[in-house]
Image (cartoon, rainbow, N blue to C red; front, side, top):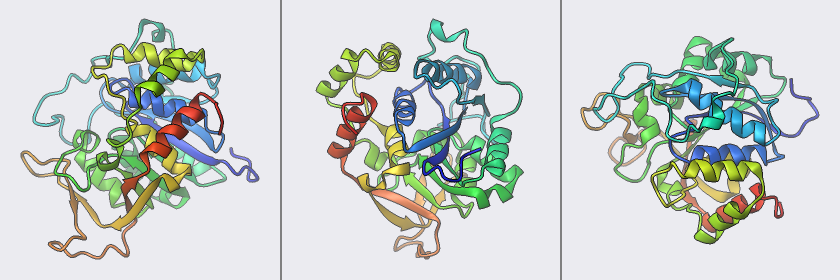
Length: 309
């Protein structure tokens, strides 16, 4: 349990680490942030056991193997297809390295059960930081709706709010996204609209590559299996916004997630616009509309490499 005098933000991080490289960068930021008390890490979508081993390896190298890692839901709540395609749910993520095979896996409970138990037992309210599909969070809320009373906020990396795009995390489980966004819990939605503006420069990447920090070295090894030369800090921005909201501008909106369309599952609809005209004033969702990308990327590098804070 958290010490009541502890001013840190108590968080659970739910992640699909192992596909896109930014989840590893996000977990790196979390363990280097003294503002956060990480109560646990849960994994979601496809081979969540392998994802848990990736997260476990990173935490071990960071000296934080005290943080529990619990594998969660491998499949969406309703529809197994994403973008109309079947998904190899048991396949290990591309960034799963041989050195991760020996990491222990906690099979004593599901991620949803862990979330429910941790939130209910916590003396301080929990913030949920979600970096993947929202299946675990939705399942926990459906199983035990009362936990909403002890959730401070949910910071979601997901959705695209001002561009016509079905973002991946929402598209993996649109029904789960709909449950979470309609739960009445204060939610900060960090979408691709802003995260694509947060790219590490080559100089910043070189600083990470030159670091002797074993976590940075692990992420650079994982990056060799990442199919892009660009590093966008999608998920790290969500972690940072949980305790440094000044990096972004927020706008209150009433949000819908399309769940029935043949081509539009996971698409975000702004129900507060001039077409739908639904009141935003009583919505619990706040959408990031702008980001100070230079300040954030500088902060990220300085924080994880502990240059200055």
